[in-house]
Image 1 (cartoon, one colour):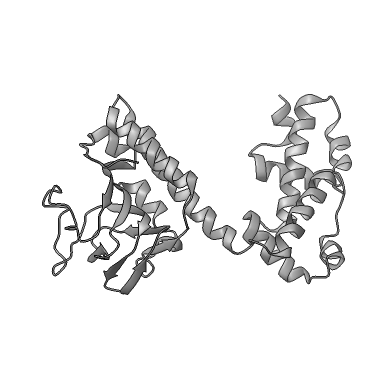
Image 2 (spheres, one colour; image 1 turned 90 degrees about the vertical axis):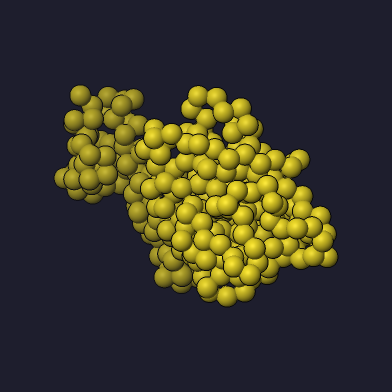
Length: 287
């Protein structure tokens, strides 16, 4: 990725979108180089003694070299594969080590939706450096964003800002995966999900399922929810509701038949749950 720098002028419609990009760039900073480059305008340029405060979010990906970052919460080491997350109105300063320099890719952005996404605990100002290693999907997302802003075709802000959301999603996904990488529980949860899908028409005993894996149900439930975002019982119910929608729309089976086929003991309970999940009762869906 060659050196690249572009400042953008988002319009009112872009800002109304909820997330918009102000600056993008990529730079190879050699050993003993001046940092940051004097090319940056006043709002972005800073010296080490004073540091700076931005009025936007920035995500800076370091793919080579080492450095340091300081903010009001402390001193942080930067290495290849580090993501630097800076927030609006937070004093900070960072730089590569003189002996190594570094390779950086960065995007500056803002907006109400941006603020919502960056409220996730992963992006706390107390931990402004996230170490993800060298990830091709992250580099590819930066590259595609750069290509979009270079051309500045109509609507480019909406697509490019979508790339920023994708980038944030990757970071959260990588963090979640750390909890399960190489652990037996990940294989257990995947097998349990398969059993739930295969047994969508059954009343599965999830506590018994946990015992079959020689783990306690409370631990199984906690890890399953961490892995999928929902508890096992709710996950299985959601599968049943999806299957019920499919049967209602693609067969002429009665609602009572579908209810009992999917393991619901009461058509009243099935109809009430279906309306809660779908927003309409089974009869209304069929109309």
